[in-house]
Figure 1 (cartoon, one colour):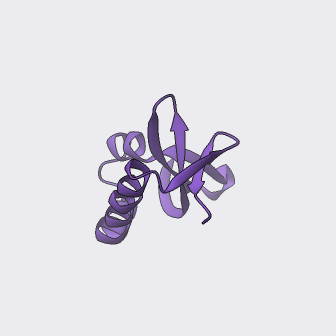
Figure 2 (figure 1 turned 60 degrees about the vertical axis):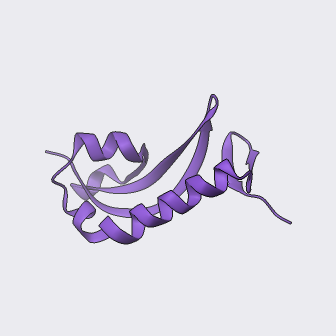
Length: 87
């Protein structure tokens, strides 16, 4: 079976009027390479994956901070991706 083994990076994307967190995942077997996945969907699909134990506090906290910045308007949209706004 395919299993996510590492979160390589993350980003926020805007879908409709919502900002979603996506993570670039390295898969096992490694022949699958990496793909961008919706964070919440991936957590629901692979609840027992080891990547959640490794990133449980740091990744989740960062995600909450990013969502708070999104609500405060600290992000801007470029090419369909939400990135930190430059000041």
